[in-house]
Structure formats: structure tokens, C-alpha cells
Image (cartoon, rainbow over all chains, first blue to last red; front, side):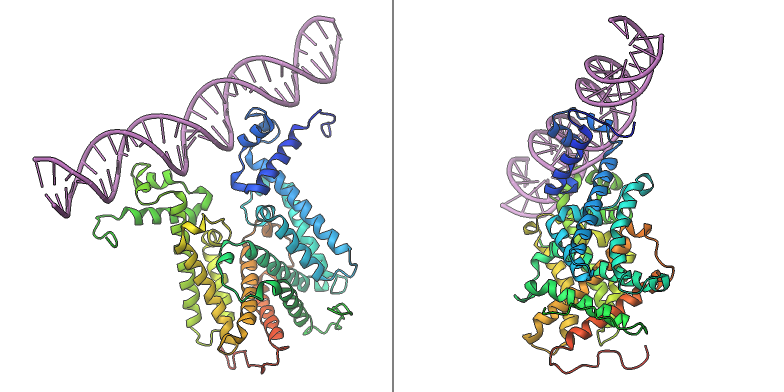
Length: 217
Length: 217
DNA sequence: AATGATGGTTGACGCCGTCAACAAAAGAGA
DNA sequence: TCTCTTTTGTTGACGGCGTCAACCATCATT
């Protein structure tokens, strides 16, 4: 009753995997129910036993992408306990660079009716919360600075998401940039995020934290 | 030979307009050639006399969107001669907010094969150049600081594009934010962009420019 | 008047998502 | 074991899509 148990081959799972493969290779617009069925050697209606519609399959895949994304962010962050957002930023950009089409699916594709897919919403919000908590940690505990932390989190998210999107944007490949720009892009971005956050936390009478890592670099 | 002259009704133009309407109201995925034809009361193949394929119609629309976007940015900028990026930022965000689906079409939709649509590329690059020139103007003339200006422009673009996208992102409507966050979002963002740019131009031994506007306004 | 280009129509083809009806298979209760 | 029901998968349709092919109307040019 809880979950299907021992099927020789779990068709639902196979559908998700096949669909994810298609999306990762050809993008969301190339995904079709019939194609999934064909790849699995089943009839074109078989997947509908497990997913009410194409949107439901899509929602399931998006949910998993958000879960993977959150896990990816969490892993990187915990590798350095101080939770410096530099690690977060690198992890964020790395994910977007490694899985561009999944990233686009999460953040650049209209969602199916969200009311019908509460799990999707939950996982997506959770991914943002990682970013938000990283900012809240910079201020003290307690809700006194929640608004400030939210603003910071949205700024960091904007900038990271913006960079991730831009690097994949079609127009990017046609811009003629100074040659040293691209290699420096990431470090420059991190530096600017850093500067903006320090400047925004200074006017507040909060004690100035030593946020930079002490050693070189 | 140059351009069609006196047609009672220019079908090509009508197709573009009808298609833009559909996109502006329902988004790119709702656009179909047959629908356009139906709306214009013509046969389903008539549009193909003017556009080789759906992608070609799409490319033409994207080109016009970039042209409108660039004009929009230029207009706002020229209203205040000093070209402060605050105006640019407002104009950028305003366009994205007013024409969300067109914005998504330009920056969030995979392009048709760019080699086949050079005009599209040209107009898109031109839109970026407005942003870039605004940053170059902050430094002196000459190519000495082109790399710096490019980095700044990409940072500003990242942040603006990120914010514009995020505000339209599906997940945004499900985040529970402190109530004062949303109203302050834009001003906070502009402040942080400002701070980041000032900090990044300071370490260079260039004279510190009085970048803020002097008086009221 | 004959010609050929231009712009439009009709009809097909093979995709697509999805509804409806059916068949096989797998448990559950007797 | 033999039914009966639920689950799972199949087949076949329907209408919509992009686009190819063939045909037709209009009109400027020779």
C-alpha cells in the first residue's frame, strides 16, 4: 500500500530515468510521452498508468532536480564549515554548468499548475532555504535580521542565477569580450558579491565580522 | 525588390503581429503557425510564403523584441544624461516586469540556429552593448579599462537579469518572505550593485570618481 | 497572348497528447 | 482451486501540430 515493492522492473522509475535522459541531452521541448514509451519498448499509453499526464511526469522530474540541486548545494557547503558563500556560489555555478538543461528546467521553464504538484513546490522552496539559511547564519540568531538576510539571500540568488543563466544564454556566445574577461569572470563575481554584502552589513550597527578567510587568496 | 510596397494588407506584418500577441498573452509554447493563420482567416500554409518555418517567424519576433528592448533602455538612459546605472537598472527591471513573456523569449528560450539568423544576433548584441557602454563610460575613454568595464557590465547584467528572472520564477510565489522585503527589493538591489561597483573600482589606483549624483533627483 | 514569378489554397504525412475500450495478469476471498 | 476485482498494459481512435507537395490565381514582362 505504501509503495510498490518488488517489481522485476519498476516501469514508473524507468519512465523517469528515460525522460531525464532525454531532457539532459536534448532539452525539455524534445521530451514526448510516446518517445519515452518507445525507448522502453512499451506501448504509448503505458506511461499513463503511472503519470496522469505529461505535466505530471514533468513535475516529478523537476522535483527530483530540485532535490539533487539542494543536495549538491548542501554537500559543498558542509565541506567547509564556516559556510562562506563563496563555496555556495561555486557550487551553484558548478551545478548550472554541469547540468545546464536540468538547471533550465528548474528555473527557466514554466511550471505546471503548482496547486496540483505540492511536492514540487516543497522541494523548490527547500532549495532556496539553503541559500537563505546561509545568509541568516551571517547575522546573529533570532528573527531580528530576517528581513536583512532575506534581502541578502535574494541578492546573492539573483546574481548567481543571473550569471548561471547568462553563461548559457545564446547571446553570450556572440559577445566579443576582452580576452581576460572570461577566465576572471567567476572570481570577479564572487568578489563583487562579497563587497556588496559587506557594504550592506556595515551601515547596520552590528559588529563587523571577519568574514573573509584569513589566509591567502 | 527592396521591400514589398503597397499591399492592401501586409500579410507578413500581420503574421508577426498576431504571433506577438499570442506570445505576449500565452507564451511561446502556445504559438502555432496554424493558429496564426486561423486568427488571420487565411489558410494554414499562407504564412509559409513569408516565413520559411516556425523558427524563422520566431527569430523575426525575437529580433524585434531585442530592438524594442534596446530602444527602451536607450530612452530611459537618455532621460538623464549622466547615464547612472540606477536608471538603467530601473529601465531593465521595468521592461522585464511589463513584458514578462517577451523577456523570457529573449533570454530564457533556446534560439533557433543562430547561423541562420544573423539579424537576431546583431540586435541581441546591440542590446548588451548599451549596458556595456554604460559601464565603459564610468571609466575613462580608451581601451585601457575595457576588461574592467566588461566585467562590471557582466556583473550588472547578471544581477539585473537574475532579479528579473527570479521575480517571474514560479518558485518565487511560494517563498515566505519577511513582509518588508518585497517593497525594498529593488532599492536594496540597486544599492548593492552600487556598492559592488564602487568597491571594485577602488582597489585600482584610478582616482576615485564622484559617481553618485550630486544633488537631489 | 504566352510566360513566369508571386502569393495563396488544399490535401496529405507523420508526429504529438490523450480519451476509450479492451485484455492480461495478479491478488484476495471462498 | 475457482471465481471476482484491481491493477497494469495494449490497441485504436481523435484532433492538433509543422511541414512537404501539388495545384491555382494574379499580375508584370516579354
